[in-house]
Length: 231
Image (cartoon, rainbow, N blue to C red; front, side, top):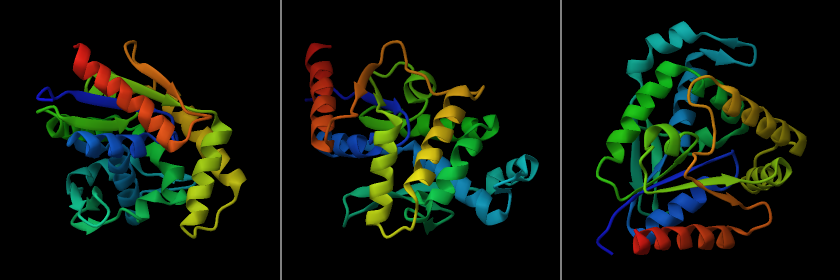
């Protein structure tokens, strides 16, 4: 179809937002933007610089160094999707660790960081034909998106998925640690003052607690086709 739309996918951590968004973009020939990877990249930068740790966050130094962060998505022909680069270095693997997950929600509460990344995200999607996932895409980044999907699932199911994914990658992690991380991120994401995680009024909720990846994608793709055909 000639019509190109903006697809905003928001939701809780470990609901499979990125997986669905990647597959939709590939199916439609759209640009895919993983905004979560952008926040994870900034988090990794803060960790590398020593600006954040378990009991410490030097917000002032972090913000003074914000202009020295260069983020880019570079398409990887082998795996078929774009990977995150921080200051010219591929950090796709590094940003998926539990250590980064433990700090990313705290980084995402900083208004100055959100403003910088939202501006970049809006530029990436200005020509439509984009699938973007995150926490505030349908409410802040693209409030006029033609299709908004809000993904959710029980915290236990999400933690189990994340745990299995990490174990399969060879990471040594306890399920209880992953579950705590999921619950902590939910609390921080939904209660932060700046752009909290909420379902947009016109978003379609997709609960995939008991759905496979394929079933989740099928439901999302059906919503896309309905939007393209009926509007």
